[in-house]
Amino acid sequence: MTKLGRKLHKEARRAARQLRYLLALPELARLKRAWDRDWPAQLTLTEGAQPFGPRVAVLVLYQPEGLRASTLDSCDYLLAQGYVPLIVSNAPLSPADRQALASRAALICERPNYGYDVGAYRDGVRLLDHLGQRPEHLALINDSLWFPLTPDNDLLARLEATGRFMGGLVRKTRLHRDRDHNGTAAGFIEAYFYHVNFTVPGGTKAFVRFWRDVPLTKGREFLRERRFSYAMTKAGVPMGALGSRHLFLTEMAALPTPELRKVLLYAAYDSPQHQARGTALLETPDHPDWRAAALRHIRRVVTTAPFYASFPYGSETTLRLGFLKRPSKPIYRATLQAYLRAVDAGDLPAPAPAIRAEIEAALGT
View 1 (cartoon, one colour):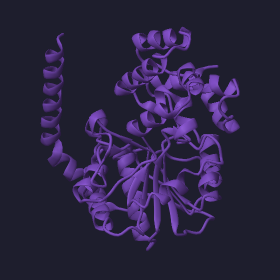
View 2 (view 1 turned 180 degrees about the horizontal axis):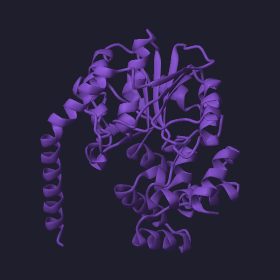
View 3 (view 1 turned 90 degrees about the vertical axis):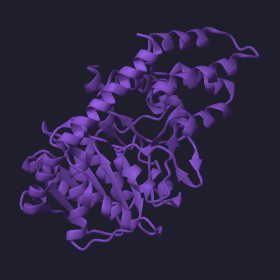
């Protein structure tokens, strides 16, 4: 298929998906009205041992096979950073798991998996309002990632220090738009980790309006992680993130050549062509054009794959995002393998033991 043919095919699929969404809106609206009418009777709430405070983290779980040990580590990290967890589980919890979480949380909410992570975030936000809680800082996090890789990561403090109403770990953009425009970030914050700073004026009304009106789904076809960011951008609310493709590429250009070689040594690829090119660069001795060739290669790779997945060593040593995505796609499996190679070589610090064990289990090693 030609480039034009692929583009036309992509646009046709997008148009068909949009048409299906528009046709489904009346049914989705009916389901949401029914959910809101019964709310919060369909929730199972358990009071936790931790008091609410000025910093709250809504931590969304879907672990029907049982609670992961790393989730408890994440709760401990949040508490150490001053963020009290409000746990929202989209699957029932066992009594033992509920008890373990209760000692680390202010509240546990168990709910049907209606609306997936968006529905869970929304119920967490509504519960805070229902309880009269008005945190100054709010994190919305789901369990599709391991974090923090090491307990000394200061990612939450850095998010607070941005001075933006809304932020997150990674901002995803089209390559040519990967910058700030008049103080408003292009693109969208990836939905597994948001941070909201209510001490920054001008965004609260848009935040409340979005979570009141956001469409919920009963299937995954219409999930759109970018809606929250786009709603904030439309309202003129400044956004920021600790990482983006542009920030990553800027950091790569500043690295000395030996470090740039390590970035390639611990790369993860989803393309045989990219992998072959990376291997060839590593086998090539330094010469005046090597750095430029390596930077061009890195730029090509992150045009089609997430920078933090493709180059975990480079991402962690420069941006210190402190997370790994669970292997829902082949690229993330390759990321885990590259990450462990860097750890075992002593080039990255070892993760928490629970994370290490879960990564090895995911890889079958």
